[in-house]
Length: 186
Image 1: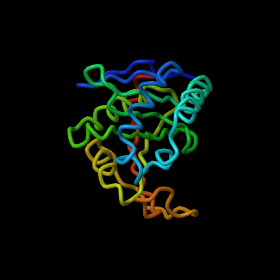
Image 2 (image 1 turned 135 degrees about the vertical axis):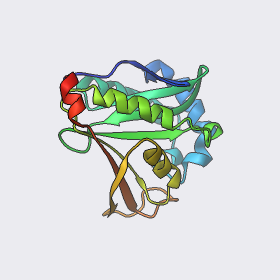
Image 3 (image 1 turned 90 degrees about the vertical axis):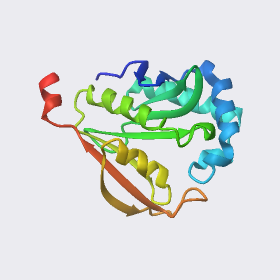
């Protein structure tokens, strides 16, 4: 099974694989953005250093197993976001997840790592689709999917309702089909 590169670049951002020694950077980014993340990211309500260390250790395990590839997103050497490619939507599919530091919203920065992840996903063997999922109330995430060339394919009510305070419990799923052009490269 192929894996994406440890470092990806697109336009003004660089994505580098989260490592255990990134705890200070991760903790600072989440702590500074807690209020911004709380409506959408359940982990923001309970985040502390121990949770961050757990995330980084889990990211290492997931990378090794090929289940997920989590990246810190930097611009000018500053962490502006976190994102990842996840094999959680079934065979042939990858799901892109992301969150953005509050100081970098509305600057077009979130679409750059999404584009880098799409390219990395296209280069992995056996991938026929890439998806982005978000709660319907999170219109900013929908805008990222739309600007990144994804097509909305469905809205699904979650069985457990909202997971975070700003959510409605209805998940919007966007998809980008990986076409025959990929088959010619692999």
